[in-house]
Structure formats: structure tokens, C-alpha cells
Amino acid sequence: MSLLTRVIRHPAALLIMIASVAIVSPLSAQITMTELQSPYSFVNDPIEKGYFISSVNGEAETADNNGFITKLDPHGKLLNLKFIQGGKGDVTLHAPKGMAVVEHVLYVADLNTLRGFNTATGEPVMTLTVRSPPPSQSEMPQASLSDVAFDGKGHLYCSDQKANTIYRVDLATQTLSVLVTDLALAGPSGLVVHPKSGQIIAVSWDKGKIFEVSPEGVVTELFSNGFFSNRFQNLRGVDFDRWGNMYVSDFTTGKVWRMTWDKRFQVIAEFLPSPGDLSIDRANNLILVPFESAHAAEMNGLETPSSAKSKQEKRTLADYGFIPPPPKPEAEGPIKK
Image (cartoon, rainbow, N blue to C red; front, side, top):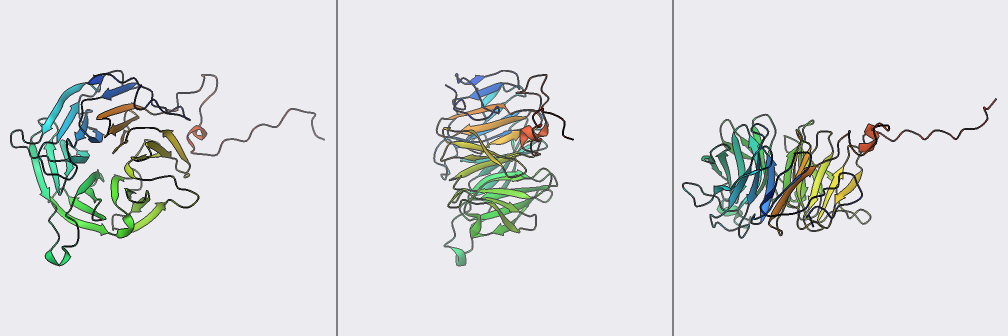
């Protein structure tokens, strides 16, 4: 049974059968990758149209230089299981976590270092280390990056889950600065830049909260767990589809949630084995989900306006929560005078 087959409640159900190494099918269908080692993040390359999966391959906080990154082609076919491999050649890669592709560079969060690799050759092109706190702040944990997000304007944002910090990196100068440090972030794990507003969305590992962070570092809590709305536990990934729906993965409960623009939450998949730092391939309308404990990853198509209804019954935006459903017509009867 597929890891994502335990899905429910919605036509966006991710239905696939698992097999060895890779199953390749049209991009409207599904792809499954196995033989990974504690995969953390799964992203697409918007320029070369391929895909990358990071594998921690060991302890998540250990500098063992044996992490690796898998590369798939634009059709989801396996190109190289260990396209980038720690300890091979001049590559250093300990525990690769979140990733982001900018032009022809794959940026990877690796413990206290942001690394850049050429997407075509896998060669290292950048190393930017987050320095340890000064002695006066020795009680603070050493920096440990968990995710990376690109704003489309020359800046990367990196989350530091342990230090409750979000950093900003200027790619032109390759300099790093602290955007915000705030205990309220409660272990910021996954990051994404909203494709329309430009605001940074951060999800919390410690308390299952969702935050909006402005480019100036102002933190606003969007959603939190309360007595009557204890939806989330440990959130790992977050991204948006082409219509502006937000998707988050709850690592502990094994669920993938979708939130529409009008703040309606729907579980589109559950009973999943540790869903990790998911992402959305907006061009192909695919959801990409790694599974840490299952050592596997899957991609599958999301619902589109042309599916799940008969040709006679036209689909409307109401099917996606964008507008309230139209009122039902009144029953036929005698004309009122």
C-alpha cells in the first residue's frame, strides 16, 4: 500500500502503489522514491524542471559528513540517488534539511551552514556559516538551520528551530543577518515566502502554530492551537499552490492539511509516516512529500479545476473554497402573485 494511500475526504487524495527505487509515470499521476535515508525535504527546480530530495542519513544534529541529495529528471525519473554526497570529492554535507533552488544553485540548510551547489554538476559554489553566539550568550544553542525560502528578490530566509530565529541572506553579497529572534516563534521549522504578498510564513515545531513574518521582522500569529482547535502538533513543512491554498505537514500526527484563503482547514491526507518538509510544484500542480521514518518520498497531483466533476457539471471556484457556494434554487411551485 502506498504511503499516501491512507488519504481521505477529498478528491485531492494521493493514491499510489509503492515499489522499488522509483515508479515513473506522467506528471499528472504519481512517483514514489525509496532507498532514501531519513529524507527531510523535497523540492522542484523551476528552471531545469527536475527535483531534489535531501537525506539526513544519520543523526540530524551530527556533523558526520554523510548526508546526500537525490536528483530526479523533469519526468520524475531517478538520475542519481547520491547526486551530491558528503565526503565525496570536495563536498561537505552533514545533515541536509530544507532546500531552495534559485536559478542554477541549490541552497541547502546543513546544521549551522547554508551551502550552495550547482544544480547541473553538484559542485559546491557557496558556503555561508552562521557563527556561534558570543561568550556572553553562551547559554544560547548553536545555530542549526532547518529550512530555506527564496523571496524572488535576491534574498533567502533561513529558519533556526533551536534558536527561535529567522535569518536573511543577501545573495548578491553573500552576507547573513538576523531578521528576527523571538521565543514566540516556538521552534520555527518550515518556511515559505507567500507568492503574492511577499510575507514570510513560518510553521512552529514546538507548539504547532503558523506565523506571518514581514520582511522587516514583524511577527504576527496567524493560527494557534487552542482548547477548541487543537489541530496541529509538530509542523514541519509549508507551501502554497497556484491558487493560493496553503499546505502544511504535521510530522507527529501524520497529516497534511490544506487551508484555503478564507481560512477553512481540510485534512487531505492522514495516517502518513512522518511527513516532512513538503513543497508544491506549482507549474505541474504537484505535491512533494518526504517521509523520514519510511525512508521514502512521493509526489502526486493536486486537484485541478478540470477534474472530479462530469463534463456536464461545470466546476466553479466554490469547489476550492474561494467563494461561498451559490444558493440552491427554490423548489418549483405555483407562481406567487
